[in-house]
Every structure is written in structure tokens, then in C-alpha cells.
Image (cartoon, rainbow over all chains, first blue to last red):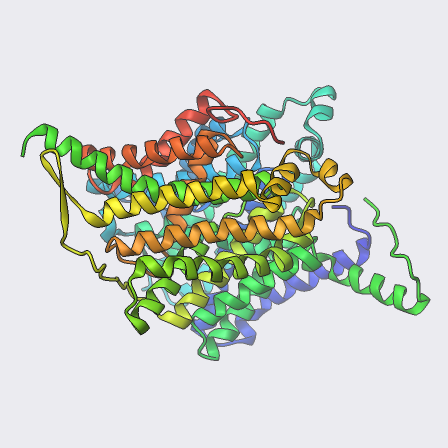
Length: 329
Length: 292
């Protein structure tokens, strides 16, 4: 994921940040502000999933870590009386710990098996939550979760937005550092060729577990943020829907790139809410499904690669080049 | 109720549920064997098959057991379209892509069905509803026995098809060695379409048998049975049809046993607990795997 046009990327980041900071002043709508908060949370979630996929592991059960972070944070906050701003990170640590445990069973598995185990794990966690753990978790009914900020504080929604924005930026910066560090290189090496990675002295098991822990941690942060924002949580958090959304966002935006999850989440949220305005219910999912399949077939590197792709198409058309250029890298 | 009676009841429930899983798992295995892809959206074909049967039944009142063939034929068509326009373009581009593409298919099929048929729970009343057959100390619904017979008949038909017909032999050749099959002049892309269609037809049969037993269904019913079928083929060995049959029966027994001993809530989770335990012990599945 090298950035060809460094300058363009830099301006893109600055522009995005400027819009993100200015937007509450431009649009005076609590509904949209709430939507933006949820979008930011899903950017963290999608980025977390993307980090795991970066190491070659495609999870279909990331809702498990999202939900574990949410439940752990809520319960810690309720038992200890700590502020949600602290328990978010404690709850995420619980998710990371469980991520390591499930990672231990996954690290030696192939793609399909890993997808199955993670998918099944989310169902197991949901079952546990509503059966054995029901006295603590409230079963199917769920429990109330302390709010990030008390609604009695004037302008609390605005403060909440900026708090979530700060955590999102911090998370993405952290992922950026991880991706460009030795760890990120090791993830890439394992994904591309495990044997060669091993020959280069990289222990795949060690790094895969690390990817699981980091990804589960961030997914836990996202889950905890969401329920402290909403103020209530139910076992539906573990649903298939929550496992599939990050996949959809990332594939559409661009798998394995830093900007992919961000762009994918923003674009899809806009489309999703736009379609909602037209009154579609089931049709929205069908459109998303079609977009997903089209992206996989025609735009395998996601929306991130769209400018590059368009340029290539145009070039080919102008040159009337009968042979497609060999794709580099 | 004596213990033996309960035990027998669990066995019968397990065998009946196992039949559905066997059909699903065999279909997945057929597709995997030939194309080396795994379709996570396989359960959606079960669901569509179930709805087609139910729709024809509601419209005409024909015995649902007779509609099964029609439903399978329709699904061969749908499967062929999905193979041609979704899976073929991404063949060989990485296994993760197949998983992601399946998610897109799940979105499309589930919500398409919800648009056409609504998303509420429905059920079909079998013409043999309420008729039981005494087996030992137990009265088994006739439907369960018919389902087992139909499953056996479909599997025998599939066996004969694979062994005796030219297309069946071409399918086996392609699954053993794709390049070799191409070299001897087999049109492997055509074989891909046929295998995918047949796999979907088996899912439609499973869906039909699922609903004629009186089980309720809605557009989201397919995911869990499909994932279980997937668990079965991991346990039984990818591409192994005998493994799918044994695994399917064991899965049916295990989940009904677990539902009885631990409570109904565990019915779905138990298969994944088994899966995780098996994969911890043997990361390549119970019987290993020959393919990639």
C-alpha cells in the first residue's frame, strides 16, 4: 500500500480533518451529529478489521470483539464507578485478551477455517451472554450503559462528537504507525508468503496473535464507544450484521490500505442514509450487496484505487492500446 | 417417559436434522471438489428453494414432496447465473475474495426474498401432518421417515449421476485434476456451471425437506444451517462426500443431544464448540484434506 501521490494524500488528509472539525458548525442538526458519531465509531471498527485482514486473516465474527468490548466496559463502569472514558480502554483490553485466546485457535488455520471459527465464535459468545452470563448481562433484554457524558451538560453532544473524533484519529494514527513499522512489514510478509516470512526470521504465530490482539482491542474500543454513546446494549451487538458491516466497508473502500476503511465507511454511510430517505428497506441491502460484488470483481483494490484506475482506463482509451498494461506491485 | 424413549427421540430428531445437513454439505462439497471454492451463501439457496416450494404449494396445493424436483430445477438455473456472473470472474484471485463475495450474495438473496415474500415467519402444512408410524416404543412422524427416504434417494441419484453419466465422469475428472481435464478436451467452465447448479439444487432439496416437516421459515433461515453444513465438511474433510454424510448425521445427533442436555439455546452454538475443539487438535480437519 504505497502511496504514489504523496502530496495528494497529504492534502486529502488535511481536507478531511478540516471538514471533520468544522462540520458541526456547518450543519446544525443533532440527527446528523449523531450519525457522524456512529460513522466515526464504525471507521474505528472497520479499521480494526482491516488491520487483521492486513495480516492475511479475514474474520467473519468481529462483532464478538465489538460486543465484548461493549459489555466489559459497561460492566466495569457499573461496578467500579469509573468514567466511561477510562472503562472504554479497560473493556477493550478484555476484548484483546479474548482475541488472543480465539487467535490461538486460529493462527494455524487456513482462510475458510478461520472465517468459520470467527463466525462461530460470535454465535458462541452471544449464546453465553444470554444463557450462562444472563444474570450479569441481562440476557436478551440487555442492560443500561452509562453515558459518555451526562445529557445534563450543555452541548454534551458536541463535546461527545469531538471526543469520539479524537479517539478515531488516535486509533487511525496508531494503525498507521503499526502498518509502517516492522510489525506491519511482518504482517505483510506473512500474508504474501508465510514460508518466505519464516525464512526471514518472522514467527508467523507470534505476529498473527499480535494482529488478533490489536484488532480485537480496537474493535473493543469501537464497541464500547458505541454503547456508551447510545446508553444501552443488547446481545444483538453480536449479530451477523455487525460482523459483516466492517467487511463491507473495507472491501468497498480498499482492503489493506489505511484510507480504505475510512473512505468505505463514509461513502457507504452516505449512500445508506440517502437510500433510507427514499424509503427503501430491503432494497438498501440489495444495493449494498450488488455494490460489494461489483467492487470485488471490477475494483479489487477498492475506492481508494479509483482515481488510479480511471486514469489507467483513460490512458488506454487515448492510446487505443489493445494490450492492457501489466499491473505493477 | 423412560430414558430409552427420550434417547430414541433424540436419535430420530438427530437423523432428521442430519438429512438436511447432509444435502447441504454434499452440495458444498460438490462445488468445492470441482471449483475449489467455498460459497458461504449456500444457505441462501436453501432458503430460496424452500420459498419456491412453498409458493407453488400455496398456489396449487400439489403435494410438496412432488414440488421438490421443480424447486431443484429452478435452483440449478439460479446457481448457474450466480456462478457465471459472480464466482467465475474471481476464480483464482484469492480465497478471501470468495468469502467477501458470499457476503454480497447473502445481502442480495436474503433481502430479495424479503422483498418478494415478506420477512415474517411462515410454515407449510404437510399432507401427512399428524400421521405417525410406530418404531419400537416411539411414534415417529411419517414426514421424518419420508424425509430420510427422499434424502437417501437423492444421494443415490447423485451417486449414479457421478458414476454413470458422461457429465458426471467429466465432473469427477475436473475435480481430480483441472488442468488434466482441460487437456483431454473437457470444457471445465461448463462443468463449473453444472456443478454449482447441482450444488444449489441439493440445497433446494434440503430447503424443501426442511419446510415440509412443518419447520417455520423466513428469509434469514438459511445462514445457520449452511454454516453448520460448512462445519460438517471441515470435520468430514473438504471434498469428501462420505465424510459429509457421516458428519451430517453426527452433527444432527450432537446438536439435538446438546439441546436436550444443555437447553435449546445451545443448539446452534454447540456445532461451533465442536468445530473449535476439533480445529485446536487438528488444524486441517478430522480427515485432513487433499486439496489446497
